[in-house]
Each structure stands twice: as C-alpha cells, then as structure tokens.
Length: 214
Image 1 (cartoon, rainbow, N blue to C red):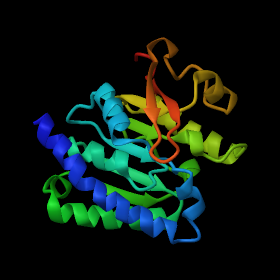
Image 2 (image 1 turned 180 degrees about the vertical axis):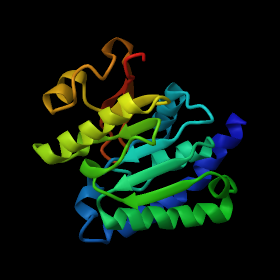
Image 3 (image 1 turned 30 degrees about the horizontal axis):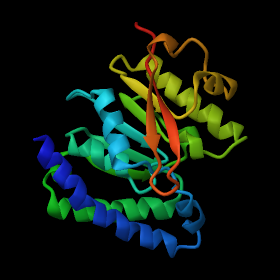
Image 4 (image 1 turned 120 degrees about the vertical axis):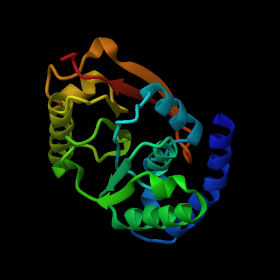
C-alpha cells in the first residue's frame, strides 16, 4: 500500500511542474513563485502527515495553499482536504491540477478536495481538525493578518472537540508575540519536524501544536 502511495507521488509531480511554468509566466505571481511560495518537498510533507496521524474523521486545512501539494497529499490518504489562498492565480492553477488528478486517480473523486480564494484573517477555522500553515512566508508586520489568523485558529482549538493539531513554522514565543492567545497551546506536547523547501533548498522547522487536554 505504501509503495502504491509513493508511486502516485511520482505520477502527480509532472502536473506541478506544468503549474509552475504557468505561475512563472504570470507577472502577478512570478516573484512569489520564485521564492518557493509556501512549497515544501513531498518527502518533508509526508513525514509531517505521518506525525499528524489523522484518523477517518479528520478534516485537513492548508492555509496559504499555493499549488496545493499538502492538500493533495492529505487527500491521497483519504482525508477531506481544503486549501485557502489569497492570490487568485494560485487558486485557479491548483483547481486545474485537481481537475487533471480527478481524470487519473479515483481518490480525488471519492475524497472531498477544494481550493478557495479566502483571506486567512477572516476565515472560519472551526470545522477543521488539522490546520497547516507555512506561515514563515506570511507577510511580516501585518497585524491584521496575524491577529485574525491566530484568533481563528485558537477558536478552532478551543471550540472544536475533535481538534487535533495546528502546524506552524514559528516557535511558541513568536506566536505569542504576534498575538496568539495565551493558554491555548499545550507547549509541553509540541513536536518539531525539520522540513525542506522545494526551490530555495532551505530547511525550516515545523512546530506541531496541540490544544490543552479538555
């Protein structure tokens, strides 16, 4: 089963290569795409999804979903998955990739997958059990984004009884400094995973945050 899963990874990658060429030719997205906007390697994301250990009732959300790799990889595991993105070109291209995948892989017709153009500062996070955000690339010094996003995630962590985990690329001290409500995260349970970026080759630390036990 694992071997079949990895084989599908290789079959999916050419669709992302084509999507990347579209973004490179679009003047509104080429600069951010050149920075590897929100994209981590498949192997890194696989390790992260393994650590999240999502069950059959999980609902996965990727914030700032870009081309949608995390969404597609979670969906390959049978997890209903959503990506939200503020840049319309990324949403359009991710939906095009999804259309191509639905023609090749039955998993993407059986498992709910969607991409939405939404503002992360004003989104309702409460229906989701696992939230991933490559927030290292979020705009700095944007208090409206940071506080709205963090307040929304904290609301999900405290109000959704099935909430599993929130993945951020910022340490606890940075989250609190940028307005994440105190007392929501159980810091003693935090896990760390080193992640590789696709284009830059840089390594970042993903922090898996869990809510305090209810």
